[in-house]
Length: 193
Image (cartoon, rainbow, N blue to C red):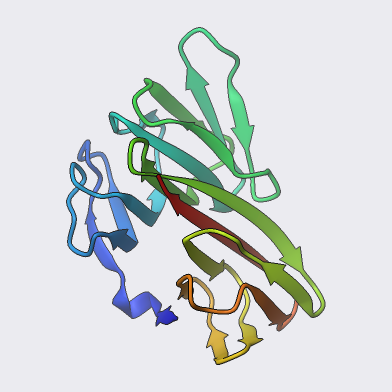
């Protein structure tokens, strides 16, 4: 188990140079855009524009602040995302551009290199003590807007907004999460191929 605080995250330019990303975690540690197995980040999107291309990468995007975002793909219907939408998965090697619904947004982005691993992202708004269960090689819990307490065998952690808890295979698979108010909580599960 590792607890990451927002002060631990790394700020860096987007791959296409159009903005800034906050890299929360990357594997292997220190990997670049071209060499990561998996990567979790947040970004502030202040203007419409193209998404960076990531060949051989699958990604999942979630809006975590702001009114929302519309993703436009060539040859298919546009997808509208807001803070209540299910996390949206798409291939990182397809051309996507975006439009803002009503002003800037912040997003949470999970990416895995297709030939090395895969991921699943679930989002829940918790208002009472809840059991979360994860089943893959790596489990990550991220709280967005409220503090949560997480407990399990050998685990006792308090996550402030945007902190993350990283769980390995030897850690407990069921967690008790106690939110401080209505908390937007993400469970990210990563499996190696």
